[in-house]
Amino acid sequence: MAEATERLRRRSGKSSAAFRTISEVAERLDVPQHVLRFWETKFGQVRPLKRGGGRRYYRPEDVALLERIRGLLYDEGYTIKGVQRLLREGGAKASGPAASDDVADEAMADARTADEAEAPAASELPRGMPAATGELNPTQRQTLEDLQSELTDLMVLLAKVVR
Image (cartoon, rainbow, N blue to C red; front, side, top):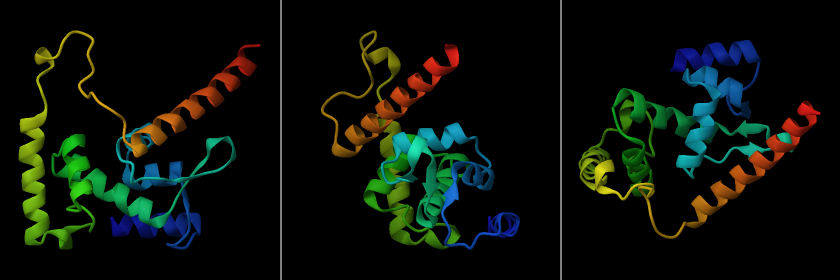
């Protein structure tokens, strides 16, 4: 990843401490932009700065966290729920191979095992019932409010185009 970071820095002319746009981060992580937007809804720790029109600017720490999330999901085979648990428990704070101390390894193993044991089979749920029930936590509520705002903005833009 360090090689890709250096290439991106040379191409964009930005320092490593500069904020990045969603397209820059998507290119760096080799994922589509919509995946980054989706991860924002699933991982409340990822909070890019949003400017007018909903344009996202990712802080260096957001990019580092997204790199770790990508590694856990794509390289290590975790599910979203497993990565959420790791982030909640602090087992995925450090990034890269140096993060594999005994505590982090144990937390990851526990998260993977619990993740597989917790998820009910789709056949166990009543038809049309969502897998998660209960009250929303503040992070989930804020994420939904942000999504609602973005959808409203998109509807306004769409209405202008259709006219």
